[in-house]
Picture 1 (cartoon, rainbow, N blue to C red):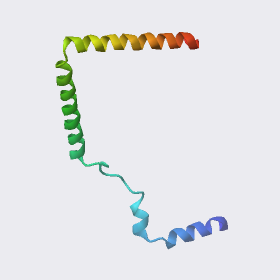
Picture 2 (tube, rainbow, N blue to C red; picture 1 turned 180 degrees about the horizontal axis):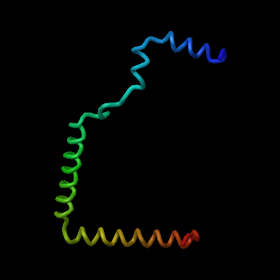
Picture 3 (cartoon, rainbow, N blue to C red; picture 1 turned 90 degrees about the horizontal axis):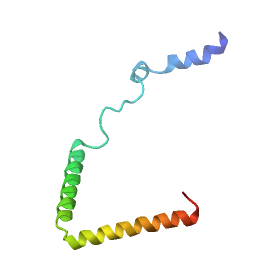
Picture 4 (cartoon, rainbow, N blue to C red; picture 1 turned 180 degrees about the vertical axis):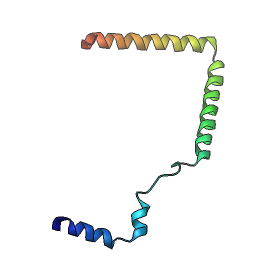
Length: 86
């Protein structure tokens, strides 16, 4: 019983309101809600811009892009084979 005396004495010395408070509680979002909406709108505008820009490409530009993509894939395959990664 003597062993717990310092603990009991320290509990008695703490004011009652501070005991009732407990741990702090996070009750709200870290960023305001309007920031989330602004981000969604901005992302949507960027996506629409990208889609509209992609639709305006000419047939030659589309073929050039396709050829460059195939060349990149061939280079990656060749590099993987030469390094022994399969």
